[in-house]
Length: 194
Image 1 (cartoon, rainbow, N blue to C red):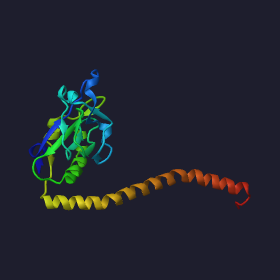
Image 2: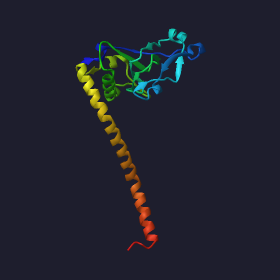
Image 3: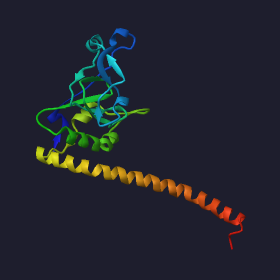
Image 4: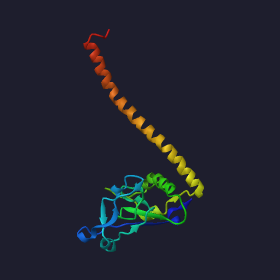
């Protein structure tokens, strides 16, 4: 077990002033929470300019950086598949040394409940970088990380399939009393009930 800060650089991004139009639409991808909708971040809705980058606390994280949301929505995780800057609600985690980024992704996903419980705020829950940095995580040898990832990715389709089956069952259970009532009424109207 190690603290996240011992094996990674963790820094949040920033937002250039919206009042300065030259800071925007400049071609540097700029990630906000809504851009992290899948495991990999391949595209951003907005871009900033070099001037926007230079005149704000935004910074460009390299492809392969793990993103973790720390404001408003705690615990949304993604892996940058492009070089991109982020807003201040997202921490970029760049690992030192050799780690399986997919393993780190699944560890980060598993931290959500723990970190949400440490969140503070009235309208929106937030955690600070200190909380994220001090979070202990398990680090098995690289070969074991790869085996864990392979097993997770083997089982995830089964979990998804089970989830879909559960949703169909819930829908059936919700609809069943109404369908039964209509069927009984139809049978009664047709004189088929004895």
